[in-house]
Length: 329
Image 1 (cartoon, rainbow, N blue to C red):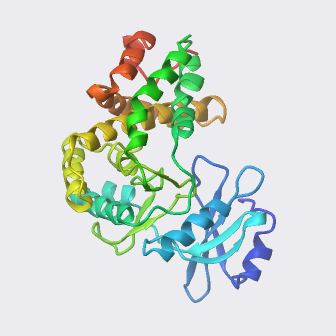
Image 2 (tube, rainbow, N blue to C red):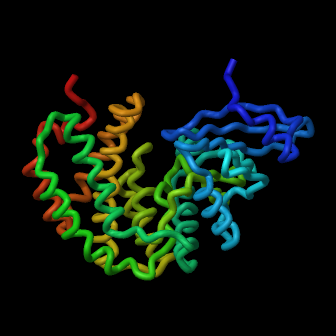
């Protein structure tokens, strides 16, 4: 029998869902837990428990309210108690884009076109009231690779040179991301819900609590260089063209920024997945590192990444780059 969090019954009663059946749902890589509530009349809602001190639902609520107020499709907030970590939201159902495409592979292009169009619509809005995606954030994220992956591989690397290379290549990106757009930061097939039972349905957004104001290429990279599912390179290329058509960007600088932010994000993810294994005892993410590393290698081939690519060539041996999902015992 699954133990339910303390306070659940009290919160659902206050929210008007005391008679609902509670179904625990699989979680993610955080301390958050999710439950589906179903009333006797068949009405459903989603319950998130993001308990302090490890979690804080206030940022999720802040972004959700802004997205909904601006015509984007975040779940409606039905009840909230941020101090205790409870949020009750609209139920978007079970049709995650990732799962849908597993069952309907012929719908891949249509689903990605709809996801790109939703992203372009977000980018046409003025940036939200969120903190900036500045150099300090980019650098801190990129450093996760040298802080976690390199030690796990038994490597002693030039961390200062790594940081300097990233600062050199990202400086032009910062100059081109003003005034910026809202960046959801984890926009990929596992965080997109298909609300109409088909691939081209409206895109329901979830897991956006870390939103910042930054560059429009970042969420595009998150979608098209997905750590969790293979996106064919020809589809990635086609969706870049599709985005350019809807967002009005089609220049070499944007493509360079896409590669730069792709490399930064993929380096970060390699570090995060290593940390999930080494610190949090969640080894399942290690199996995704080869996919992430392959995308990183493609990004590093862009001339805009030359200082960072040179650092990788000097500091990460070729045999480890070819066997990037395995760590020494």
